[in-house]
Every structure is written in structure tokens, then in C-alpha cells.
Length: 117
Image (cartoon, rainbow, N blue to C red; front, side, top):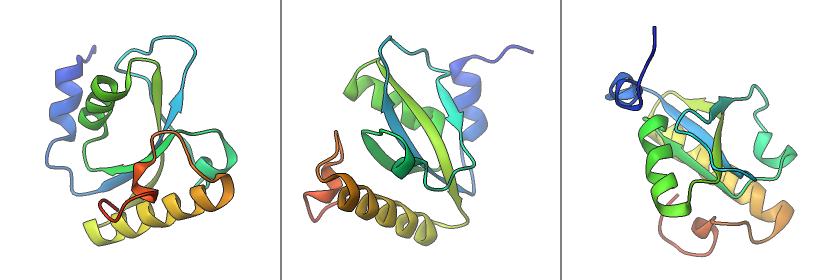
């Protein structure tokens, strides 16, 4: 069975879980299906990433990022949260650890402002 972008977006709608993800820079233009999964909960520390975020609808969020940040990005989901509070905690912890290890990081504006995670 073949799925379209809209089919995948609808499948994630009203999801009861949150996903912690990293955006990575690619050399070539990515397609909408460039969303991967990693079992490495420290993927963001063990690989070069440009952004860490949280979403309950990663397909829709990836589309938003592609519109804002360009087409040469990929998304890697590396953790999951049972509820919004846990998701925000995991996202904030990942951003903190990322910036502590690498300093400024690509598009990660959340480390430079009081808004966001």
C-alpha cells in the first residue's frame, strides 16, 4: 500500500504520544519521507544535529521545518514521551545537553531565549 504525505499526516493526527527528534543537515534535497528512527536515546549527542524538538505529529512538524529551514534536512526520532510534561522535560534536557557539549547549535534558538522548551 502506498501512502501520501497527507495520509501520513492524518495518521499522526491526535496522537497520544510525543516524539523527541533531531534535525540533521543533508547534502541533497530530502523528500517528505526522510524521517528515520534511532534506538539511541543520545542520538543528538552522538551525531551532528542542527536542532532538537518535540512533536506529537512528526510528519506535520517535519513539513513545517522544511518550509522554514529548507529542503536539505532530515528528521531522526530518538525518544518518546507518554505525556506533554514528560515530552517537554526530555526536550529541554536534550537541548541543555546538546548546548553543553557543542555550544551554539545550528537552529537551536531555544538555548538562547527564555521562550520555548
